[in-house]
Image (cartoon, rainbow, N blue to C red; front, side):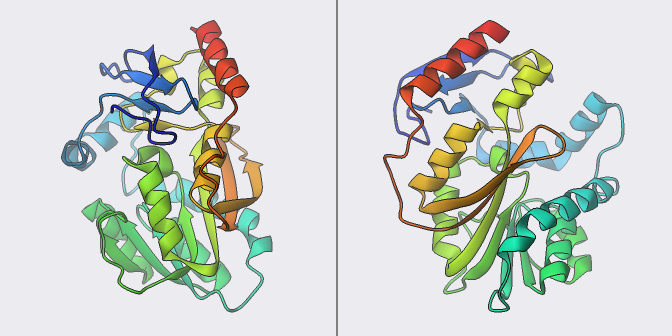
Length: 276
């Protein structure tokens, strides 16, 4: 990458030279806004091959337990219940009828939300095996990427991006696409792995970096992404795992100048250096 996906600056500093799995992956930080990202990173095609055959065995070996389409639904159910309670106060009208789950994996979360809130759920995910699992719930499913799929005139009253934004190749482009797909009174739910929480928990920057996460978001950078993409944050929450941060948003005016302060960027880089 030659320019930052958030602020378009070209001034970077290298924070790490390998990831937690031992891959030679460089994590760069933008000196202007503080966004952290892999650079260089794999292409979409290479990530497709990675997720198709390497990803699940890799994370299973790292955690010392089997993690695949047969074992993750249990964890996803707990996650779905917790996030649904966070969203519930904002779904107060029967006029919301449709939902899109971007990167919805096996469909457990989308199915729970659809049942709880009376929504017709659509799931889009690039992994064919996981989409096949999602079809069991009666969801409308799409195998592909939200940036590339032609939805025509279809719009959604609720869009959820659960444990997915860190895996995207173009966060700004995806959020712009979501803004187009969201109805005028729609809601967006999105959550991040807080990069600061990760490296402070591990006392290691490298252990917070992983090849499957092209981006490493913090509260300032995520809020900047949302505001610059035309979303107003109504509420945020720290998850029970002390690692994720959730946001519920509604459409608003795009503020392209809503970038993290220079002081917050300097503080982040000083803290990273201290941890190193």
